[in-house]
Image (cartoon, rainbow, N blue to C red; front, top):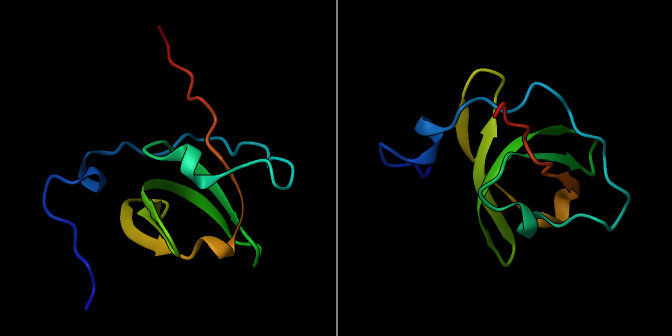
Length: 94
């Protein structure tokens, strides 16, 4: 059974992620827990990479929203599959 977020959850209120891809940090220099509730770029050990908005980190699972290129969808992943993360500050225009 799949988990479907309730109406009004962050997936419906999040704007698209930044248009740039941040530089990959050095090994063992980034932690997903430091990026909770922030736009985060994730690199997996299998070579895949994507924008992610983590909302919860627990033992054995990170859950949040993954950017598909057009919309956000709920996505959970085992933290052992994550190679590196980057959640740089997003520049503002004020």
